[in-house]
Length: 242
Length: 243
Ligand SMILES: Nc1ncnc2c1ncn2[C@@H]1O[C@H](COP(=O)(O)OP(=O)(O)OP(=O)(O)O)[C@@H](O)[C@H]1O
Ligand SMILES: [Mg+2]
Image 1: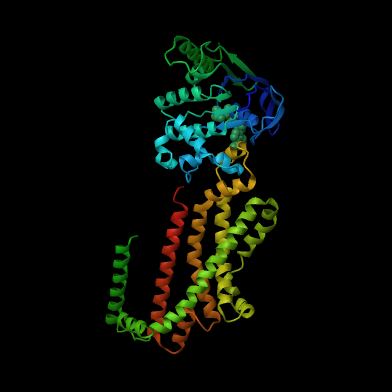
Image 2: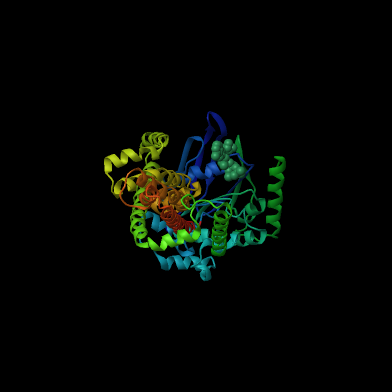
């Protein structure tokens, strides 16, 4: 994998002339997890999709730059709340779909390694329909690892999972994506407190930085500093006061 | 619907038929008894088989050609905005013309042979197949396309590996409709002008007041149609297996 760049997102967005969010600047440091919180509809997914180069409903006015000044195309991987597995492909083929879509030779050996890293070797030949929601999201993680991109964009990837599976997935993702630049959009203060090096709450007119724990992610759920951060985030999201 | 139920229904139908014939004393040139029809079926088996074969070929070729053209058109429409702008209104407008009304013209242009019937079947199934598959190609889940985009997928490979595969159940629905319409198209073509085929044989038997032969032919046609529906249903299920 190439060196992971930091990303600087600066700009404003509007829909049909009406402002969605005013000029904001989001700095995403290299090799760190940056977490974006905020109320529904404020534009978090839009920021993430703009960085990913995907279509949005907004007119964006601004700049998205990598710290090494190279384009971000082909350097980002994207994981959403829905696992986006293809139901007609086996786990192995889902993990290797990227090469297939680019017309490259499939690397089944590496696919098997990635599947092993997410603990699904026994399920490699199953179709997604035969897996649980948590297992499916692991396959999506293996597919993301397979792509080997230095920048990872996560849009509420664990929000559809039950509490236990979600905690496990958070730890697994933190471990496997530790050496990359990650932007995580989430609604869950606990998730932000566990995983992020830095965190922001997005509002229509500004981006508010939050105090995050200074320990290394993934932090244990009952770590006092993590709990304090989680409470502070929750309090801020509810009242708007720090 | 399983096999047992189908057989029970068929037997019940034959019993009701026989009862009607006995109780009403209806003349056998209006409604022959099931036994008479069974005898005709056996007596004329070679004649019926010969004509059935022609109809089978017409329907089969009509299905294959119509489906192929439908798939190609749907792909073309789904991948080209220009094609959508130009072709779609023409396609929709063409549906305002009752295809059956074209039968005499098709016979005039393509003759009494099988081709006028094949083209009739093709014309009838072309629109349902095209529009079903096109709808499927256009409603690929947006998330799949986002994923493909971030992975640096090529357009052609996205079309084949994602949009095409995701649209297969829709193609299956189109094929189910085609299986209903194709035999109708072929038989109407045969009624309008032919020297072979089950539709032709029915008219011939009618003209010679061989009503038992006419009914025997009708039953063979019904059985063939049911077989077509069942096999297309199996195919459609396969296409939708993993969705
Ligand atoms: N399908 C759509 N059609 C029109 N406008 C849309 C559509 N999806 C989103 N928008 C607009 O874009 C705005 C930002 O949406 P975005 O998905 O970025 O919000 P979000 O912060 O990610 O919300 P959530 O937390 O609910 O995911 C919304 O307020 C909405 O007005
Ligand atoms: Mg969102």
